[in-house]
Length: 245
Image (cartoon, rainbow, N blue to C red; front, side):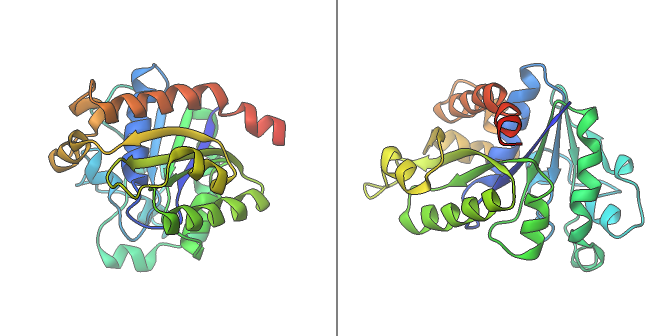
């Protein structure tokens, strides 16, 4: 039975999409069948990062009731990795009903080892529906106190809602001398620190090239951190949900 993991944050721009793409591809390289879903219905960046930006049918069509979810699943150029892309035009956004996300995504669970859901930031309705489509959640934050506290609040709400919070990714660490250290961040977040992803120019280069860093520069510090995250997720995902269930 597959694992449904939402990637969430309290603020935009923390690296949720980067985390979703790299985690999905790292898991695929490890031999797992992975479905990445772009559930950020207004930004739709995952499709671009994963190389499918001209899809005829998207998650928006499914949520508008004009297509079936299987029509919106595409094989990517990465081993074992599939993608449900999102549309990038406002007409699709207006027609899509985010309340249909959980009922659309959860039935896919038996068909994949991992379903990784790229969620909008914050706690608005579209974000909550995307996050609640998962059974487990990984929080993504940057090492700034406002970002950490906002993401901590999202974690608290999701725990109360019944999701298993696997822990958090401290992304872009080392960018500034004022960065909150990992041990302090973990104390504030009150959930396990899964990995520290360092500030790495290769991650930025990869983004500009439209290729996730685990493929673009697999020996870079950023890629190694995402592989470490994938190994940790394989070890703990599912188990924690069963314990909490």
